[in-house]
Length: 373
Image 1: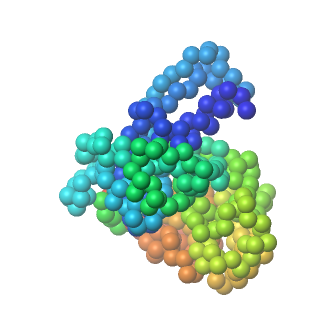
Image 2: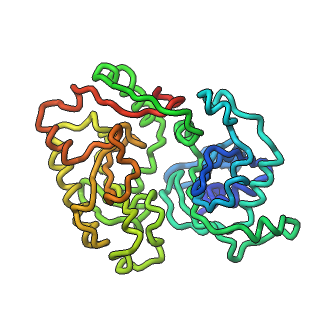
């Protein structure tokens, strides 16, 4: 690994970020099972880095302020600590105030306590997209503990899984902010062309979905790959948190594993330019049929789950604007609400009607305070 790559890897490591003297942490959302934290810190990177060779023309570095998201799967007794430095008050949330405009004053004392707690852990890399997304298991095993730390805090701490998004784009941070509620949008074709499509293009042009390239080219997350077709891949979705660790668990042990009740897989199209449901036409019917067939077959052969136990659907609006479909077990209702999910079998039938999704009004739920609103 060259010096530049080493520096980039160090910057993206959770412990390296948390250990920066200028790092501050604020609580975005906290529940009994999950916490999302906003980290604000400085990064140093070589100027004029050659994107191909990784070599810098000039050894000087530039310091910039960066924001990252740290998403933790936790146990209930961490909730009070990790939620102690909120970005919004409950009153602001109730009144629908936009977090980016009404942030609470940073509380250095609360931030320091959260940082102290998190720095007890070692972070073992479990998967890496090659871009801003990486996944870790945080554990106290072999951790370096400061003898000055609160012993009660240390003894109560448990292990958890971690998702790091660094650097986090503004739309990723906005999506992670406390929910101000939702509105139901009835999007006409004219609204799509005038408002939604230009917004989608700005997101695509920003480069915030460049990590997809590493996935579809199978350069990253190979351990999660189930199908590598000429036109698409099928992966284990990172939302399937109960899945046995793909890097360390033999695949034969995945068959009939108890975690299949939470089954969640993702099919991602290799072709660029298909951003969402609105872009689909009759020419995409063979692609959709193949994705369904190959995905269901792979799930059966890998996990032993029959196809009549799997729903296959498309989101509108999607989480990211590169075409993909979702596979979930019927018991797992994450993401399949009627105002967002569209069954692929229904979509295929609709596409036999000319320009169906270009010409129809689509109703969906949208979070208040987002850029698209």
